[in-house]
Image (cartoon, rainbow, N blue to C red; front, side, top):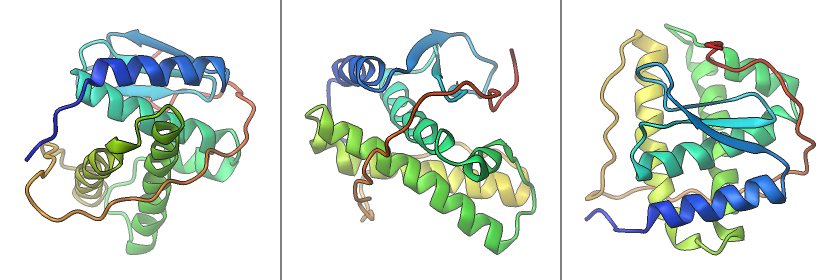
Length: 175
């Protein structure tokens, strides 16, 4: 069964921590259809049309990618790639990159006192990964479906690495 949480409150707590402790800016704006958020290393952009649950997942996941981008040019390049017909090896690299972003987001959840959402974000990650795996192997964009009534591998936290925000090019390059 899908859990019920006060997602707007958790978003507010996460934004306060991200901005005050990590020196990032979080903003909302209308993004192109199908884009739920973006990042540039110093700023996390959320689509103003996201529902509260999607908004929280995207915020936490993009926070994880922001930490990655500020520590690794290789991961930043990987984040800009949008392969189609990706090889098994490329998919494995992308999966690790994506999974670690959510794991960093889990650490942030624990930091702000919302560790009870660890399974919730794990389920969102696995739905996101199913979407991305399809996109990167076939070019198709299936609907993202979070499965609440089946077993799920719960991701473990990955410590937020120390980083200094730097502005890079946005992934979506729509600005």
